Image (cartoon, rainbow, N blue to C red; front, side):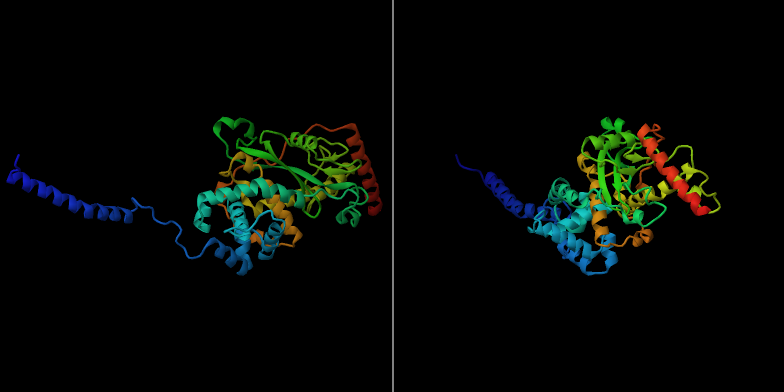
Length: 396
């Protein structure tokens, strides 16, 4: 059958249209790409890599490193060297220094993976891998190295050299307190974590010595748990007090031979003995005053810890398993910084890295616990009477 002239003309027009589309479609694709559609635009275009940023902070003004990583450059380098030498972290295409920077930046600012991507310029998967490596591998190793119990055979110098404390507290190893740390968790699991303030938290037990070094951390109990319950759990899992030794605790704990609490119904807090207040009037008040002077060390240690790492005042985006490890990580770095003579005074004049409006309201302490054991009360009475006799001699 012959093809009509009209059909030949129509066929030629269709072929010309097909040829035109060959040029039009690529042009439209490229136009769409420049407007954010189609081909992905490269996200990290800065010439300053994460490695360069970390190096610049370590080589620059000390305050820049303190603000970003919460420690001085020489301490950061010492820690990176230790991690590399022990092969706890190894250099890959990303250096040990940069990996440490990831974790400290997260810890200092409650930085999300998105925040880390913007600052360091790696992928979300990279940060997920390295942050979890810290939580699962690095923190357990460092905790065994840098969170150590005190030597029970030595009397601390602050007790040994002070007649107000020696010999009465010669067997004292340190002070213990509980502190609440905010958490985030799915609504179906809220109930046990809701504390007396109505917010969500875990109750963390901390022991410290009289140099403000943290010697024990128990993290993970729900916010509804009492300090005494957390302590009993810690003891069942290995926290030990050698025979004849004791820690100082507040009124939220039972008074026992291993954990000396203040007398109930007698002045205790230091402000009650300050200017224009009466001196101790009896053995109980004197014991309470000196007990408070020593136990105040754990409150000071916790204060420094939360100033340096305000992530301890807010809920985070991590899994609950990792949220429980954040106070332990903070305690490790706190001890490390103190051992290398890091500065703490700058914290008093430094705004928080995290907006204080995000801080979570938390309980400040437990209600009074039971009066304690007969043995604990007898030990406390003996110390108080000996202390009072010496005090009276001094006054006369």
